[in-house]
Image 1 (spheres, helix red, strand yellow):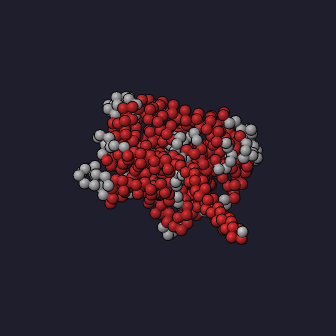
Image 2: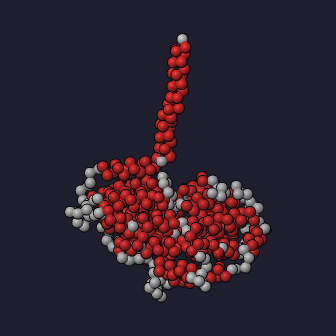
Length: 518
């Protein structure tokens, strides 16, 4: 009896000991399910990569081009789903290019493999692009503006003069967005500077953060930034992506002034439309606040007298702007050269505005990495004929071969607007799509089509992040203030996008055609 009891006891112990093991085993599927839910975007990207690689290589498409299209699919899905950090995705893409392209036959000589060393050189070729120099330099300029507080002083100085009517404040906000876009070549940095100022204006008017006035003003702030991303070449990194591809493909560039002449009328008309859309669709509860101007002046007074560092930076910025505007007219110094020279002056003893130690934490190095790899991805797509092959399909499917330039502009614009809904970065969108745009333009047989001009105009459309909050980092910065609902951004953004598309078509049929771009 005692033996049976002991045996039972041992069995009971064994059962209890096995319980954690069973529980652990039961937890495994749950953990696997959690992993899939957390990383579904990455798993989908890997599945797309493998699926495309498993397909037979189409006739007329080099093996390297086939593999680059698989990498493109991987990149697009990762960027659309934000499965992994953008900087990390850039490193992964570089590694994929090194192995998959390295073990593919060379496009120039199919009898030999390109080799991992050659493929890695191609994967990092974007870092030798002058456009990357401009982007990196622009980030330093933006950091200097933030460090010195010059951007805030300029914004408050303009707003203190516009008056106390809410309609005047909206106009002032749009003007501030334009002026800061000229001096701060980073959209996220501009909006990060302007958001606290906008919140200060809301408080000065005695309005709640949950008021319609607050929502209207904050959305106006961020949409103005997106509009001037189109109007000014140096206002956004994605513009440099397009310019980089144009320089690599055609050996030509687009000067700051040429870009401004082409794009500024569009941006001005969009700013007028923005004023009416926001004030009509989101009419504020208050028409005027007597303490509004005083509140802004108090914020300006709190900054104190203009510091020496601000004066130096203002002098450097205005000189740089003059060099940008006269490129190709009074001198032959390109935008990248003048910008990096300005940054060098910022660090020199005596002239210096900040130290490297001050600047380093303020620079989003991930943006630089993404930009370089993005240029490399597009360059590889063009060099391996992957972009050309894909463009031929697009041309055939949409009947673009003999189409007019205006029809091509309309179709490609709609395509970019729709696909942008899935992207959270216009830089990533430009990296993926501009090589295909260039290849499409090269594939059509429309007489007299200006490939460089059409690419520039379609790059304008790449910056249309007006609809969803997640379409651009600057939108997310503003959304983080909790001053507006996503649905308000969407409904006003849809109207702005329709107007923007209509303007593209109108200007494409008139102004841009007269300039010879369409």
